[in-house]
Image 1 (spheres, rainbow, N blue to C red):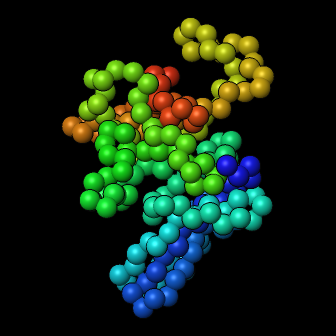
Image 2 (image 1 turned 180 degrees about the vertical axis):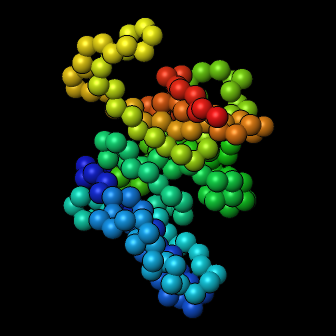
Length: 191
Protein backbone atom coordinates (compact mmCIF):
# COMPACT_ATOMS: atom_id res chain seq x y z
CA UNK A 1 0.00 0.00 0.00
CA UNK A 2 1.20 3.52 -0.79
CA UNK A 3 2.09 5.37 2.40
CA UNK A 4 0.99 8.72 1.02
CA UNK A 5 -2.21 10.19 2.45
CA UNK A 6 -5.35 11.16 0.54
CA UNK A 7 -5.32 14.87 -0.18
CA UNK A 8 -8.48 15.23 -2.31
CA UNK A 9 -11.21 13.24 -4.03
CA UNK A 10 -11.84 14.06 -7.69
CA UNK A 11 -14.88 13.28 -9.86
CA UNK A 12 -14.51 13.28 -13.65
CA UNK A 13 -17.65 14.05 -15.67
CA UNK A 14 -18.38 14.04 -19.41
CA UNK A 15 -21.03 15.85 -21.40
CA UNK A 16 -22.86 14.43 -24.45
CA UNK A 17 -20.46 16.27 -26.79
CA UNK A 18 -17.39 14.60 -25.23
CA UNK A 19 -16.31 17.65 -23.23
CA UNK A 20 -15.01 16.73 -19.79
CA UNK A 21 -14.87 18.52 -16.46
CA UNK A 22 -13.35 17.54 -13.16
CA UNK A 23 -14.53 18.60 -9.73
CA UNK A 24 -12.80 18.19 -6.40
CA UNK A 25 -15.50 16.80 -4.10
CA UNK A 26 -13.50 16.94 -0.88
CA UNK A 27 -10.86 19.34 0.42
CA UNK A 28 -11.29 21.68 -2.53
CA UNK A 29 -9.93 25.22 -2.18
CA UNK A 30 -13.17 26.34 -3.88
CA UNK A 31 -16.61 26.33 -2.30
CA UNK A 32 -19.04 23.62 -3.43
CA UNK A 33 -21.03 25.87 -5.79
CA UNK A 34 -17.89 27.13 -7.52
CA UNK A 35 -16.50 23.58 -7.77
CA UNK A 36 -19.52 22.33 -9.74
CA UNK A 37 -19.79 25.22 -12.26
CA UNK A 38 -17.71 23.46 -14.94
CA UNK A 39 -19.79 20.28 -14.57
CA UNK A 40 -23.01 22.31 -14.77
CA UNK A 41 -21.82 23.80 -18.11
CA UNK A 42 -21.43 20.35 -19.72
CA UNK A 43 -23.95 19.45 -22.43
CA UNK A 44 -26.64 17.09 -21.08
CA UNK A 45 -26.96 14.25 -20.64
CA UNK A 46 -23.90 14.15 -18.40
CA UNK A 47 -22.29 11.09 -16.91
CA UNK A 48 -19.65 10.49 -14.31
CA UNK A 49 -16.63 8.72 -15.78
CA UNK A 50 -14.33 8.27 -12.82
CA UNK A 51 -13.72 8.80 -9.14
CA UNK A 52 -10.07 9.29 -8.23
CA UNK A 53 -7.89 10.10 -5.25
CA UNK A 54 -5.22 12.78 -5.35
CA UNK A 55 -2.54 11.94 -2.79
CA UNK A 56 -0.19 14.24 -0.88
CA UNK A 57 2.70 13.16 -3.14
CA UNK A 58 0.64 14.26 -6.23
CA UNK A 59 -0.14 10.66 -7.25
CA UNK A 60 -3.43 10.28 -9.15
CA UNK A 61 -5.19 7.05 -8.12
CA UNK A 62 -8.36 6.08 -10.06
CA UNK A 63 -10.91 4.04 -8.11
CA UNK A 64 -12.79 1.08 -9.67
CA UNK A 65 -16.21 2.78 -9.47
CA UNK A 66 -17.97 6.11 -10.07
CA UNK A 67 -19.37 6.99 -6.66
CA UNK A 68 -18.74 9.72 -4.14
CA UNK A 69 -15.97 8.86 -1.67
CA UNK A 70 -15.45 10.46 1.75
CA UNK A 71 -11.92 10.87 3.11
CA UNK A 72 -11.35 9.10 6.43
CA UNK A 73 -10.29 11.30 9.36
CA UNK A 74 -6.73 9.87 9.30
CA UNK A 75 -6.62 10.33 5.48
CA UNK A 76 -5.33 6.77 4.86
CA UNK A 77 -8.32 5.94 2.66
CA UNK A 78 -11.93 6.67 1.79
CA UNK A 79 -15.41 5.46 2.71
CA UNK A 80 -17.75 4.74 -0.20
CA UNK A 81 -21.50 4.15 0.21
CA UNK A 82 -22.82 2.42 -2.89
CA UNK A 83 -26.29 2.97 -4.32
CA UNK A 84 -27.91 -0.16 -5.77
CA UNK A 85 -26.59 -0.72 -9.29
CA UNK A 86 -23.70 1.74 -9.05
CA UNK A 87 -20.85 -0.79 -8.62
CA UNK A 88 -21.66 -4.15 -10.17
CA UNK A 89 -20.10 -7.43 -11.20
CA UNK A 90 -20.16 -8.59 -14.82
CA UNK A 91 -23.46 -10.42 -14.16
CA UNK A 92 -25.09 -7.14 -13.01
CA UNK A 93 -25.24 -7.99 -9.29
CA UNK A 94 -24.01 -5.42 -6.79
CA UNK A 95 -20.48 -5.92 -5.48
CA UNK A 96 -21.60 -4.48 -2.14
CA UNK A 97 -25.31 -5.17 -1.84
CA UNK A 98 -27.59 -3.97 0.98
CA UNK A 99 -27.45 -4.25 3.90
CA UNK A 100 -23.63 -4.03 3.66
CA UNK A 101 -23.49 -1.54 0.81
CA UNK A 102 -20.43 0.40 1.94
CA UNK A 103 -16.70 -0.25 1.88
CA UNK A 104 -13.41 1.37 2.84
CA UNK A 105 -10.67 1.65 0.23
CA UNK A 106 -7.02 2.44 0.95
CA UNK A 107 -5.16 5.37 -0.61
CA UNK A 108 -3.79 3.00 -3.29
CA UNK A 109 -7.39 2.01 -4.28
CA UNK A 110 -7.12 -1.46 -2.74
CA UNK A 111 -10.10 -2.67 -0.72
CA UNK A 112 -9.48 -2.40 3.04
CA UNK A 113 -12.80 -3.85 4.23
CA UNK A 114 -16.53 -4.00 3.69
CA UNK A 115 -18.67 -2.09 6.20
CA UNK A 116 -20.86 -4.35 8.33
CA UNK A 117 -22.59 -4.55 11.69
CA UNK A 118 -20.31 -5.95 14.38
CA UNK A 119 -23.03 -8.20 15.79
CA UNK A 120 -26.69 -9.09 15.57
CA UNK A 121 -28.02 -10.80 12.44
CA UNK A 122 -31.36 -9.11 13.21
CA UNK A 123 -29.80 -5.92 11.88
CA UNK A 124 -29.81 -7.39 8.39
CA UNK A 125 -32.90 -5.27 7.67
CA UNK A 126 -30.73 -2.17 8.13
CA UNK A 127 -28.60 -0.62 5.46
CA UNK A 128 -26.05 2.16 5.23
CA UNK A 129 -27.71 5.36 4.00
CA UNK A 130 -25.23 7.82 2.50
CA UNK A 131 -24.21 10.28 5.09
CA UNK A 132 -20.95 9.97 6.98
CA UNK A 133 -20.16 12.07 10.02
CA UNK A 134 -17.19 12.87 12.22
CA UNK A 135 -17.38 13.91 15.85
CA UNK A 136 -14.64 14.61 18.38
CA UNK A 137 -14.93 13.64 22.03
CA UNK A 138 -12.88 16.04 24.15
CA UNK A 139 -14.21 15.12 27.62
CA UNK A 140 -15.33 12.01 29.42
CA UNK A 141 -19.10 11.74 29.68
CA UNK A 142 -20.73 11.63 33.10
CA UNK A 143 -24.34 10.74 33.95
CA UNK A 144 -27.06 13.23 33.06
CA UNK A 145 -25.04 14.82 30.28
CA UNK A 146 -22.39 16.43 32.49
CA UNK A 147 -18.85 16.83 31.19
CA UNK A 148 -16.04 14.99 32.91
CA UNK A 149 -12.29 15.23 32.73
CA UNK A 150 -10.67 16.23 29.42
CA UNK A 151 -9.50 13.43 27.12
CA UNK A 152 -5.98 13.93 25.78
CA UNK A 153 -5.66 13.34 22.91
CA UNK A 154 -9.32 13.77 21.92
CA UNK A 155 -11.11 10.77 20.41
CA UNK A 156 -12.23 11.26 16.80
CA UNK A 157 -15.20 9.10 15.84
CA UNK A 158 -16.25 8.52 12.24
CA UNK A 159 -19.61 6.97 11.41
CA UNK A 160 -22.56 6.65 9.07
CA UNK A 161 -26.29 7.24 9.08
CA UNK A 162 -28.31 4.00 9.31
CA UNK A 163 -31.95 3.36 8.52
CA UNK A 164 -34.21 0.45 7.71
CA UNK A 165 -35.97 -0.29 4.45
CA UNK A 166 -39.32 0.56 6.05
CA UNK A 167 -38.33 3.78 7.87
CA UNK A 168 -36.33 6.95 7.24
CA UNK A 169 -32.69 7.09 8.39
CA UNK A 170 -32.70 7.38 12.14
CA UNK A 171 -29.40 6.49 13.80
CA UNK A 172 -25.72 7.32 13.50
CA UNK A 173 -23.40 4.37 14.12
CA UNK A 174 -19.68 4.72 14.77
CA UNK A 175 -17.48 3.05 12.15
CA UNK A 176 -14.18 1.34 12.95
CA UNK A 177 -12.20 2.35 9.85
CA UNK A 178 -9.71 -0.52 10.25
CA UNK A 179 -12.22 -3.39 10.47
CA UNK A 180 -15.34 -1.90 8.84
CA UNK A 181 -17.47 -2.73 11.90
CA UNK A 182 -20.41 -0.50 12.81
CA UNK A 183 -20.83 -0.28 16.57
CA UNK A 184 -23.54 0.81 18.97
CA UNK A 185 -21.96 4.03 20.18
CA UNK A 186 -24.87 5.73 18.48
CA UNK A 187 -27.19 8.65 18.84
CA UNK A 188 -30.66 9.18 17.37
CA UNK A 189 -31.68 11.68 14.74
CA UNK A 190 -34.39 13.90 16.25
CA UNK A 191 -37.64 14.28 14.27
